[in-house]
Length: 466
Image 1 (cartoon, rainbow, N blue to C red):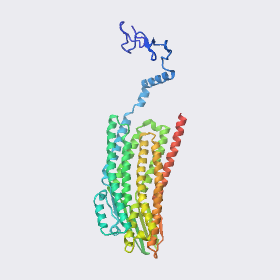
Image 2 (cartoon, rainbow, N blue to C red):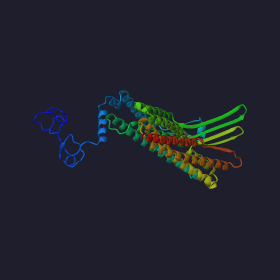
Image 3 (spheres, rainbow, N blue to C red):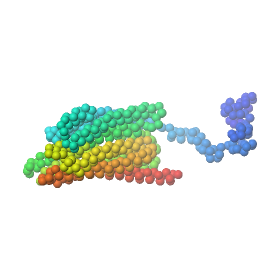
Image 4 (tube, rainbow, N blue to C red):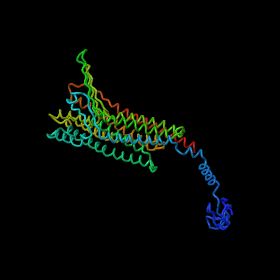
């Protein structure tokens, strides 16, 4: 006899179908009361409950079945070979970027150019390991005898910040690299919920933040130009920048993380041709470029003092900590008679406060910028709408960049006033400049506007789709 449900032929003694397992009687139990009812019925003959699925549910079920059995749909949902290859290449590039961050973290350092003049002005290059021994030896030697207050404070503060940055870099970057590597390995088994690129981007950008903070801790440039007569022009230029190894690590990591995001973005295939994806790529790439430029402005000298008279020019550029060191050295020379902070308390206290607070704000700003760039990179890579995180970090970056700008303006203004007060009688007009940090604040503000516009446009697209 044939099964009334699937028409499969069964033995005459069969109670249930050997193919579908349903009763050969053609009767099914009611899901509500358990009464045996005909399988072709719509409602139970005892309790009146619906037996067949609702029309909408039936349509959805049939649509799902047709999608499953449609070869074209199945082929479109299944990633092609070239897409899989690009995904693995992108993951490998991401791991390489994280590996560069790990290796070159142990090579963090700054170098100085300027010949013998840098020794005269006590501007030296140093590496990350300086703060695990030599820094405290130099501090003890400098403070054997009682020293002026501002000079001692500058030595202590610079050493503390240098140690904290060095320790944090040596802990944070290796931990992030391990997480990246674990995610990449798990991606081969299909168990990883997130791709390795997002964590690799975070590893690289955190390394970049520490490199720029280490540079900002020591950043100083001295330019001296003296025109003795019409035919002689003597100039000296001393600058402190990141060491060659650190610069190489930043360049290699940037190339690798860019290739990783590009490979994963291209591997998404036809999705990249859809308007929402094109919109996201356009706005996210623009925001990432502006954020990178803003971050580059924050690495190094943020303020500048300029003195020009009779063809002679002196330019002193420095970051927050070197500004504090400059005032400390002035206090050391001035303190032979009285302490600089006793003579000019308002200017000295403002400079100390702005230097310390400005550098703390700069640390937070760099961390927020690293998270912002990671979120943007993840959006380009995965195509996911991580816009909420990107927008949040852009807001924080803009706020902290404005606060850093205020600190830089107050710092350099009071430094100029203090130098003029010390050189009373032979006063040279000083001009101040804090353009780099101001430019960074403007760029972060533009990045924020771009992300706000993208959020508004994507929301309107979603409403139209609904």
